[in-house]
Each structure stands twice: as structure tokens, then as C-alpha cells.
Image (cartoon, rainbow, N blue to C red; front, top):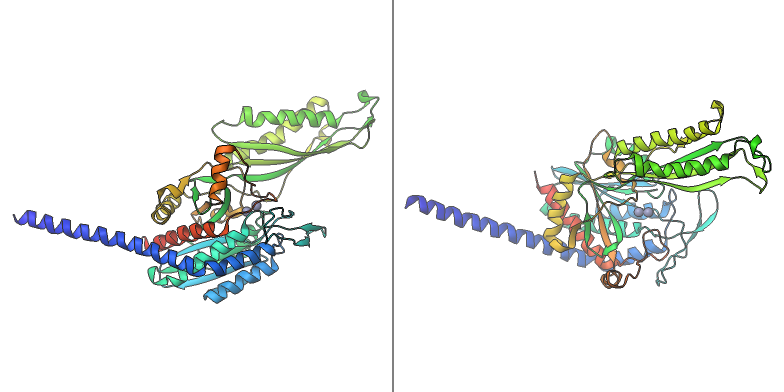
Length: 446
Ligand SMILES: [Zn+2]
Ligand SMILES: [Zn+2]
């Protein structure tokens, strides 16, 4: 009797606890949604402003000042000019975890062709001094507004969590330079080291405000490679007196097709694309050299090592077969720092997914395939601090457009396309809601 009484009390108590935590989660959702609606019109105006004033990589002067002053208005400690036009904002809200939330800021040299009333008509000089139209064709304007919306929500709801937010507005993502320059400028030495780093990238492939996740490398690593095939030129009528680099370049390009198909384990995706071939000046002249430009994509470091080894071996082998002397072997240049894969931390992703589902609903948050595009966010997870990172796709397309694409195959303009036109409000609502709920849960969990 006594024992069943204790069990009954325990059951009642646990039902009470469960219903209380359910109400709390629902209440928190309501608070977050209320916050979003209270700021959405103002942020929409900011979105249109940012969309109409895009700036190219390394030239995000006005955009970064806008981000810095918005952070100041929100009450963050703001440090400007980190790694160029980078901005760091710090919001300390008692003892707890440190979480980094990142946006990028730069736009692309593309002439906007969306027909939108607020389309960009900006033309600016690029790094080489050549005038170019500029457009936010990668949605970084949406990243900035969603980022500010999340920060605003977190600060308005600061009673719900404890910890420190590190807000990062990063320049030069499109040239894969910004994360490197901010890391080199000491973001992890000068400011608190994050326990986690999070960000979004918008995607026209998914419905506005829905989330695509992958618990592992979601984006590929990338490196560019230049290959100079060197022969010995001469008269086109007397090929026997030459070593023809055009023929060697052709053989090289075909032989490179076997690297992914014959050398790399088929369960590991990789891409080798020769995007440019230049050589020769006239019909009847065999040139001395031909230049190739390649892009490579991979999801694992060891796959990149295999690609690298093949790119050093194959052109050289073809040169040897053609009788090229040792001092004239092909020159293979691997360009600068590689952009590593965006290697999402699986635990962090699945934690965030639970939070995101708890506010958006299970059907709005789904696992997607990794993509062979690249993003320099991956570097934040590759420093000695070993910070778990997670990048999520944030759907940005009109729901009817997606249905139409599924039913009739009507193409939605992709990222980096002149017609890319995301839907601001539903994207913002879903993005801010999912990220705010995730941050609050992460701050409150052990
Ligand atoms: Zn881009
Ligand atoms: Zn982008």
C-alpha cells in the first residue's frame, strides 16, 4: 500500500514535470515568434537596403559598418576591422557556454536579373580596377538579416539563457579568404574561444524557412590547380621536329578523367574539372606550352592527397612518354590555402536538429545530401581549438515555386544566378526561430 502510494506520487510528479517542460518549450516558442514579428518589418527594410547596396569581396566597407553599428545598438561590445572588414560582437550574459554565430557579408560580380522592384543596380570596380555589376546572388544579405534577427531575439530573451554570444560578420567568403584572415587576426586568441560555431547558408532548393541538415561534411573541400604542359614548339607542318604540348595537354585531360573513375574509392565523392585550356596562337604554329586550370572537390583530406598525387604523377608520365627532358617536365601549382570541407560535428548537428524541430515541426527540418559547393566556414572548425561547427541550409524559395519545380520541372534560379530571388519574410521567420531555439537549448544544456 505504502509502496503504491509512493509510485503514485512519483507518477503524478513526473507527469507534472513533463507537462511543465512541454509548456515551457511551447511558451518559449511563442516568445520567439512574438520577437520575430515585432522586428520583421524593420528588418525587411534593412534587407532591401542591403540587397540594393551589395559590395564585392574585400570591399565590404559600408556593409561591415552597418553590421557593426547594428550590433552596437543591440548592446554588444563591437570590434571592427578584424582580418580586413570583419566585425566581432560580444554579448556576455552571465556564466555559461560561448557560442559563435557567423554571417558573411560580400556579394558577387553579377548583373541582377530578377525583375524585383528592389533589384541591385550597383556597379563597382573590382580588385583589378575593372567595373562590374554587383549582386547579392549568394544570399549573404539574407544571412546578415537572419543573423541580426537571431541576435536581437537572443538579447530580448536574455532571461531564458546564460552564456556568451560571439557574433562574427565575415568578409570575403566568395573568394574563400575571410575566415582565414579573421582567424589569422586572432579571433580565437583575442576573444573567448567558442564551444560551438554555427551558421546558415540559404538554399533556393528548399522551401523558405525550412532547414536542411547533414551530420558530417555538408560541403566539399576545394582547391584550384594550374598545370603548365611544356613541350618544344615549331612549324605546324613539321610536327616531327617538335614535342607538341597541345597533344600532351589533350592526353593529360583525358587521363585525368580516370582519377575519380579508376583511382579513388567510389564511396568517396570527388570532382576534378579542367575549366580552362589555353595554348597556341596560330593554325600552323606548335606552341611551346599549354596552360590548364583545374578545380578539385573532395570531402575527406585523404581523398585530396590522392588527387594531389595523381595530378603530380599523370601529367609528368605523359611528358615522359612524349620524350620531354627532365628539366621541362610539367609545372603543377596547387593554389594557396585549400578551402577545407565544411565538416559538421554530427553531435552538434543532431542537438540543433532536435531544437529546430521543436519549434518548426518535424517536417520542416530534414536531412539532405552533401553538396560539392564550398564555403570557407569550415576553417573555423580546423584550428587548434578544435571547435565543433555546424552549417545548415536555410530554404529560401517560394513554396509554390518548389511545388511547381517538383511537378513540372520548372527551374528555380540557383545560387550565383542573376535570377536568384529568395523570399525574405518566411525565410527570416524560419531561420531566426530555428537558430534562436537552438542557441537557447545549447546554452541551457550541460
Ligand atoms: Zn557564394
Ligand atoms: Zn554564399
